[in-house]
Image (cartoon, rainbow over all chains, first blue to last red; front, side, top):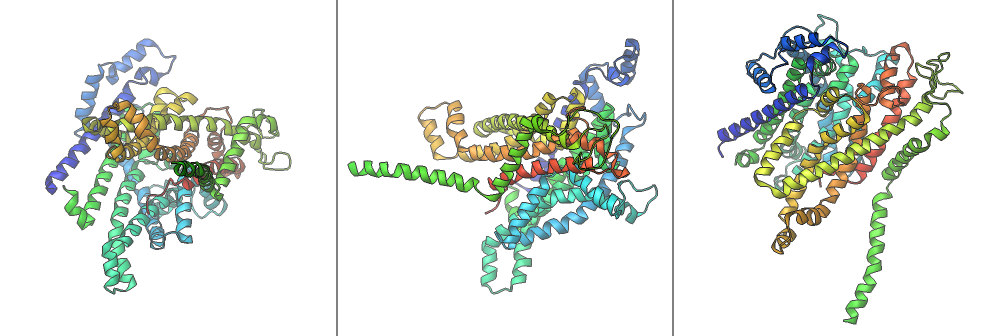
Length: 319
Length: 292
């Protein structure tokens, strides 16, 4: 298959996946709780008031009409008006996305050196003590809920030692470094969570590259050790790692409901949590579809990067 | 003839002994023993906790709210004056009931879907795979959160929702294991001998992918503890006044800045010990061996 056709197929499945997600969200958002007006006004509200609100919101129309209305507007970037904030949804989502991106950036600043570095150390000497320690510690850290490690870090570094502010939201007008400084404490639990995963993927890549024929011929050719490691092993091993990091960035941009709530970061996760609690469906739908879009796009970028970085896959991958 | 018989007869007990030794070798590793002991400890707390709690975990004492740990209340008291230690002991009950049931639901339904998609293949597999991908395009916590907000939190809904959210994850793993098996000779042999699809799936393939399913079960269990605690913390899981670790952390969180750390710290410790114990076992069963 030609590269162009590969990209087209890839984009096609991506759009199909997003469409399925939009249908699922719409069904979950509109069908399950039943009466939107009732949910907003509470169980004791007047029946007429509920009906009037449903009429004004357009939630009394047939479900397919509502879906088409939503989809046709969403496609041109209009996600409707928030029930709770009485304001257009799109700018609010964009603003929260900026905050999420700042948090994700701080996480990556710590995660990349730590995860990749320990993965390389583990992979170069498999089954050594360092390797076993890195793999087991990574697996254990990965499974501690982020809000638990977040709270422990908050108690130690925020309250006891007072090294970092206990909120992730920097004051208005804060500069680049201040914003980053406020986000260190919210970022650390995520770094702890993900380091093991990144390290494990890097390790696997390094172990495989070490056993490959090209590495053996490089050694037999008489290249010195660090040349073999940097030019032959790491270059090949890190393709997988790059793909993993791309996918994880998607998660960091959208999947951080708990950490954002805990540290008061006004990101996409908080936006979705608050919208869900307030039953603000236009906001919820927009937030979740943006999350899903980020997820599938970053996953696709990850796959493409992996193919692009590995010359053998470049030839094989497009078949 | 007799020689063969005696050989077989001699081999049988040896085989049994080796297989027992293999099981012992597999489980008698320090991580498994430590993990299992911690799990058993919490299980005992869940089952018999009421018998040995120092105080009534549900009794308010408004004269001694938020007292720091001392000789009387080892882990201090919470905002209603309830004994934190007693509530931690009893708080193991709901999470140890909900998480395993949710895991079981997810692994059984996921294995079923994976088995069917992997074996049938073709268009079913392509369409099914797309739908699984669509579900996995959303972060786990978002899927669970939306559903719980829509239908309201209760123990049953938490079990169902976590189970359903696990289904595509398990299905994908099982599907690829089944695909590998489908190409093996014994499947062609079974097909040629006229076995029907159902019996091939359940009697031939299923026993051969049970390792994958077992590992999936233990790994998912660890994450289910994670998920249940997280949902309770967000106010979407176990509801007050039940004693629950995640819930207690959410309630104690606001008092942290006032220097009252014990509710959060000890409940966090309980969650950490439970998920770590499960993870130690999963790890030793080979859950993370994705490299040679």
